[in-house]
Length: 153
Image (cartoon, rainbow, N blue to C red):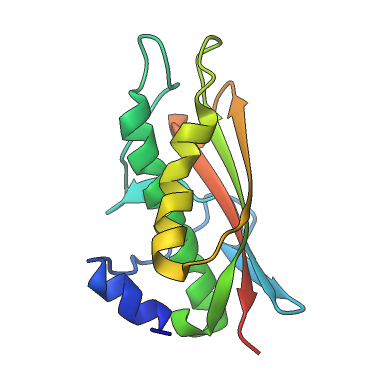
């Protein structure tokens, strides 16, 4: 089986710098062989890729899907920084995603497929997931994601 770093490279991805925490927390922690990330926003080069509530007269669900992929990449970078190497990450255990949503929007699961599809491509294994609609997210982001990764032994 190819390494995580090889699959990332083949897919055209490069791990970004880990975003500095905006408050009193760290981007990720390790506990008993599992790395848990803090909520990751869709930041690219310090800028949010998708803002505002998703749905009617708001952010486009396709843009939010891409933002979820960016959240996943940022979570992978945060986990790799704690693990010491992205190749120490065995698989994704769970993704918890939050979508800033208009009251009539019910496509949160489709938005979070952006993260799940990314992780499926990189790790090739299924994971558990929650997709939750919320009224607002930090910095007016459209999507935020938390991820649990299992470490290789």
